[in-house]
Image (cartoon, rainbow, N blue to C red; front, side, top):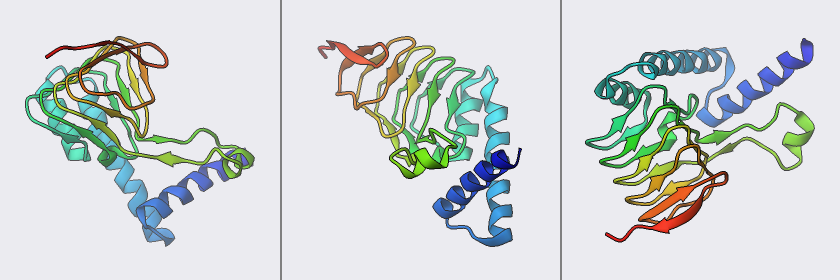
Length: 177
C-alpha cells in the first residue's frame, strides 16, 4: 500500500509542476481543478444531447468549432482538456477516446529511463468524421475531411482527405474532393 501512495504522490507532483502549483494551496487548487473538470465531463458523458455535450466540454477547456456533433460516451482527456482542438463540422461517434497525455507507468525506474509522462496537443481539423470506438493519442493531428474507421487507433498525423482504418491506423484511401 505504501508504494501505491508513493506513485500517486509522484503523479501529483508532476501535475503540480506542469500547472505551476506549489505547496498545500497548490495541491488544493489542483484537486479542485480536477474535481471541476471531472464533474463537467461526467455531466456531458452520458447525455443524449450533442449541444449539451459540446457546451460542457467547452467549459472544461476543449476547443470545439461550430456545427459539431459529439455522441454520448466520448472520453476527452480528463487531465489536459485544453490540449484538444476540434475544428468545424466534426462528427465524433460513441465510445471514442481522445487523449492529450500518456502516463505509461507508475514504475519510477521506467519513468527515469525513457518512459516519462508525455503531454502533447491533439488537433482535429474541419470536416473530420471519427467512427465508434476509435482512440486518438497524444500529439496527433488529423487533417481536413478525414474519415477515421471504427475501432482505429490514431497515433500518427493523418493528411487531409484520407480514410484511415486499423490499429495502428493507416491511410487506406484518399478522398477526391
